[in-house]
Image 1 (cartoon, rainbow, N blue to C red):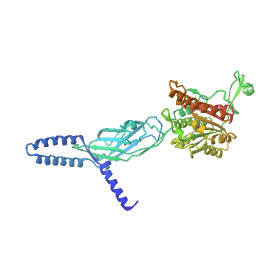
Image 2: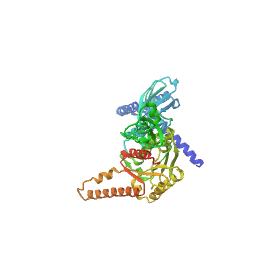
Image 3: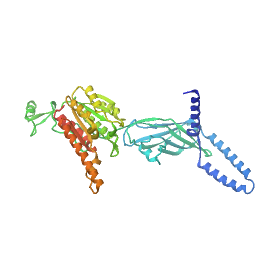
Length: 472
């Protein structure tokens, strides 16, 4: 930047403060007085005293305006504080408190207007917009009297999209005394908040007992889970394996007792998230990436609760993030922070790149769950090749979201040529999906094409079934 441009920049910033953030605004009282005075001046003109009345009226008004502005305290005697949580779930309301702090030596009360500035993607901000222009409209304005050194207000906000957001400065207007002018200023109080995926189901899983995991109203943990690690001893029931009878416990208790075995802990679950262009498609008011990310975190919570390791890989045409395998609830926090701000890219996904990374990083046999879109599966030539390589040392599972619009089109009544054509295309697409599932099953690779409301449940059940079969 040259010296002349720096000078112009300082000048423009100064003018912006004086005529924008730190300007003065007329009150309704001043507007009303000016309007009434103008009418009287016009009437006095008929009597021939128009010039005297004009200058006299506006000189008196200017004098009172100067006195009013001098009585108002300086802008430096005010500050603002905002109380906001560091983290909140997407589409879940949270409380925000904005407080105005004044110099205790102010000595008199003022009328104030305090407005907060919140990000554009938040619920209440969006409802305040009156047109499609990207105009910074304050979300909430509080009006009242400042009679103490601190006043404030609370409001509810809810982020509609994941990511890190900044709440900007607060805007203050205050007036008093004669009440002709308002001073306004921008009070710096920047605050950060992370909008993470909806973790309500994850919290439910973590709070549930080990033998009563429930997701979306369906029980996840099954009583017939078996394994090689000893878990507990209970009374023998009809249908139990006689080879697991604990004869020592039977001798002590006087009744037949059997050992309960559980699947081994310490297995590895690798979650792979596609962030390509198809994952940015909106599906029932959420993008496909949002849906799959929430399902992936539910699967991670179940696996960590079972004592296994979980790794996370997100990719598009490049590796966007990778979290090595870890265990325990602190690792779930690490997975959430690594993935909460993932966005879809307008590119085709590089399945070969992602699966090659998994093969390089994961040496131990693991359950690899790939969340993507069926359209991406169908037209990618690298995926079957790398999936076969992956199957040699891992257990791959390809998961995609079923398209409800495709199901609706398939059920459309062919009342005319257009609807008949739509129905035939829908049946073709469904047939292509079914053929792909069968083709991959022939290669020993399972593909699940499930509705959005059963995405997490299907992935978790497949993981638990695999554990029950000692497939890892």
